[in-house]
Structures are given as structure tokens and as C-alpha cells.
Length: 79
Image (cartoon, rainbow, N blue to C red):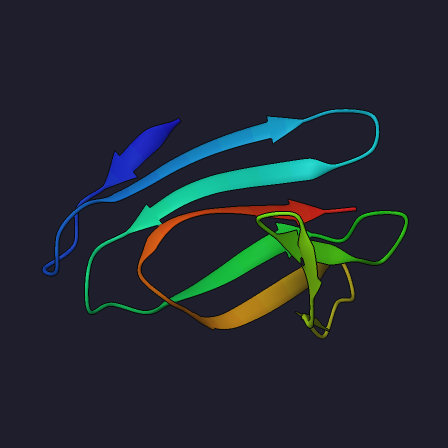
């Protein structure tokens, strides 16, 4: 859990992991976009607030990359 200061305001993050998923709780400042990396889960899926979304694996295939994540409070999960 932590806060990353940026020129647009703080980015708040919290990470949890259980046997089925890796979860990232994030709050991105208004009028800001972020690039998010999540470890690739065994099911090969990523959700945003419980809904499956498209995410691309990085060249190492160990992480999913979510480009242009918009502002607000969100929960990303890698399943």
C-alpha cells in the first residue's frame, strides 16, 4: 500500500494476492491516464471492477499491460 506523488496529484495504490488472483486497487488523479502492469495470472484474464477487459501481455509474457487507464478509483485483477 502506498502513495506515489505526481505533478497531477497523488496516485494511491494497494496490492493484494490470493491463490486465484493478483489485485491492484488504484486511484488515479483527475484528467490523468496511467499505464498499469499486472503479473499474468494462470487463467490469462484481466478484470476492471469485475468485468473482463482486453489487456496485452508485455514482451516477456509475464505481465499484462493496461494502456491509458483513466482517472478515478478502480480495481484491476489478474486471474
